[in-house]
Length: 76
Image (cartoon, rainbow, N blue to C red):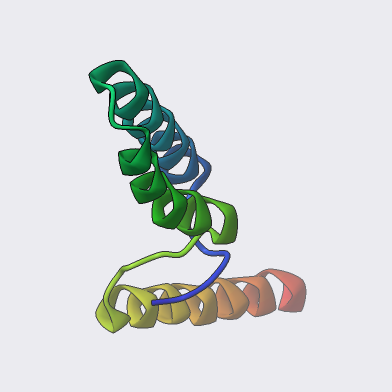
């Protein structure tokens, strides 16, 4: 779990999910169920990403490749 690494699309989907939970709770007549929207709001606000460590390791590898390519391009 890493903070501030979720994509904009994920944050937007969490926002819509939060709004749907609130609307359904008040429409059904159970406003206390709207409390369930708070964890969704916090996860959207902090942009928590629940990806595994292996995908991050692949990103690190790509960054090294880019640095090597830049070094080759600048040497020419």
